[in-house]
Length: 310
Image (cartoon, rainbow, N blue to C red; front, side):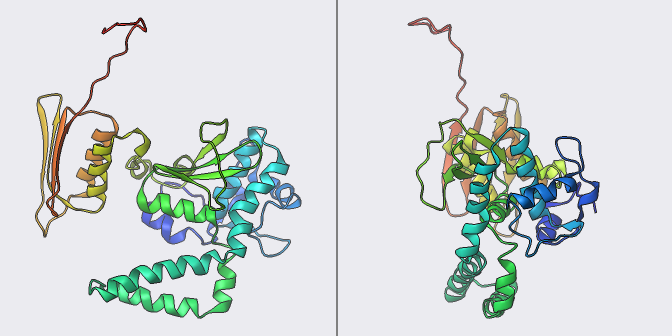
């Protein structure tokens, strides 16, 4: 299989499955990606393979890491430092029992819903499956070779449809970006303004995901607090009424009742309007009685001379 034009739902369902034929993939050096596997293996950069051999079928999760390695090599990043990055994402996850931790976090969320009576029938089934998985030691051990801090980052990006990425610093230190937040699970201090390599998860997903679906992803770094509020309410389907004025003439109006939700197409149009700053004013009211109105601030470049207002 060659990954291309997948829906987000299909990608999420197949993310850990060995469904990609690596023989047909090309690296940035225009050579077969498969030919680099022995090199990465010798340098201990393929920790997710359980033995010293591999086949031609890999998962999309594994391909994401191979693409990161390919980009780092093309940018001249030292292999010795790349080992630190691999340890951060994979070795740390292995010894932290990250798969079990993920399942326990999901179980905790569902138990909270169960206690307040909001657990759906589907969620009740998932809760039962979580109990089964958490009691299966062989399964949990196998998941250690699939689930990593990198896969967690990619899954977050897919679920939230927001920009996510990896910040890689010269000394081998790593930070992860999730929307507006930049963090490091080791608790290490880092300066985001210091020189670094940034690898966008969304950019890597272009190899898999239909471009129309990727266009819906929002880079919240470029949004104001008010715009972020609108996007959040769109995501939670909490909109009661939304009115957007574009160029003082065109009005996009959305009305939603308790038994109606915004269509995906219209929600993505609204996100695009906010992302492109293609509006003059916005007013929103939500089902939990929050209201907000704001105008776009138009900034004008000045000449740089003291006192200039032009």
